[in-house]
Image 1 (tube, rainbow, N blue to C red):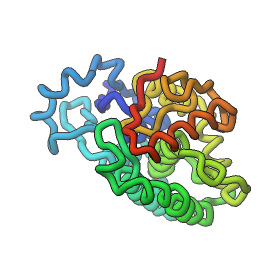
Image 2 (cartoon, rainbow, N blue to C red):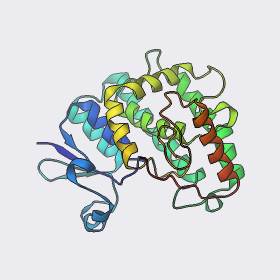
Image 3 (cartoon, rainbow, N blue to C red):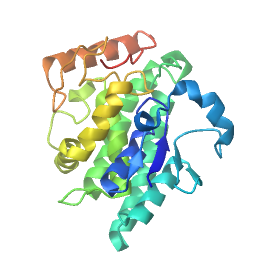
Image 4 (cartoon, helix red, strand yellow):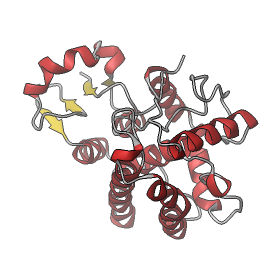
Length: 262
């Protein structure tokens, strides 16, 4: 019997567990298979351990809550968690992914919270221009020559980096910068992005809604802000235009809506 993963119809913290499940080889069902949508949340909420999603339901009816617990549980039962150094690195990447997501929530406006209710435009600009580069630089140093692989921690980190790539306003050459200083990390990211399991999960997520983060307006879809095509490296002129529009909108104090992918 399949395990069941329920989450809100946004990327955010839902795409990470979905990726780990898809790579695990375990039979699983997601929102589409289960017919789950936001209208059912009010009835489901009292049944969740912490009143939040994601939530993994096991074949025997038991529930696993909290993103990191779900990811680690999947890795344990699927045997994809690694051992020795690989296991330790996977756990480190889970921690870093959590840190990055917390920073996104702190600095980046969402469809629910505008920039003036975050830390302001100056802090937002500094986050992309300085803070992100520091974190990515540390990840580059940590990244093995063969990349981080597809352990649960690596896939969870990828899910957060992917949303950051989509959200980056284009300052200082965009998310990866104008140089090759993050070559190893970027190559691992692109290889993971192109892999069939990732494409299956990511495309399904994009068809629902790009992300709760407002500036995560997808550069790979034709959503209302960007009108961008699927550009493999997010470097097409339409993607650049989308990025510029996002940054200008935030700088003007606007609450940018992510829209819905078509």
